Image (cartoon, rainbow, N blue to C red; front, top):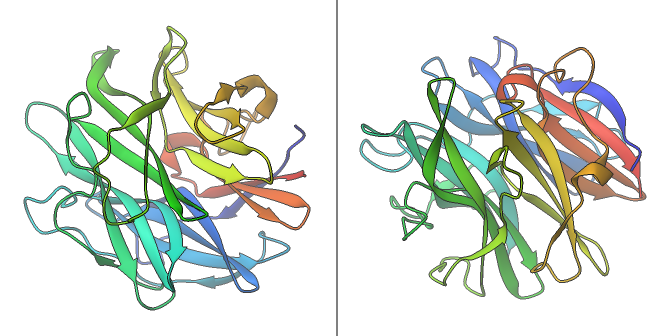
Length: 303
């Protein structure tokens, strides 16, 4: 693949409602524009989602920046009381649904990530949580992490890929999470009680986690973009896989050909790739160093 990097298109600036970061870009097309959701951090370091919009043909041209969060923290004691990380948006029956990871500070481990679901009645401008408990709650072997949910509506099936795990690895005296990518599907977007299936397992000795997966469907195959965290780099790099059916995936990380830059905002890490098809191009939004502290970057390739 041949990508052209366009640099940062959106920077977190102090005169916005948030304090830092613009993490986990999540684009959708609404009429003649691209709306890009992201999660920013307030002064307490807690993440909340919002969005900005760009020209459909040229995402470097920002046309609108929303001036407040579109969702609030959960009530004290809930799974999302210390952060909300928006991970995917799905439209169904004239409603937009937001899948997100709730960040919960714990006592004997650093944190827990479980997935929630919210609904919008105003074309995705704001969202209301559907429950104070996770839509992906703890299960055996996934009792710490069921986060990073990406949902794709594929005909009449809702397909969900997410980060799952129950362990930690110590790197330079600090605990880091271990998780792989699991899969669920349902015809009822409110019900995800089926048995999870592992779709992408850690294959290298050095790997210890995958970041939020992002799936894009073409006529006869699927592409999955994900982030790979390794002991060697202690940072995220991008991964890439393809599938004919969305069930059986072949990792082709080296074919992606999109890595860190020599200098700039993505010279140490590159993560949270979010591609979207517009005519004969793929616009890929992503974060660089330190989980998007400098903002959101753009890379482009022809289809």
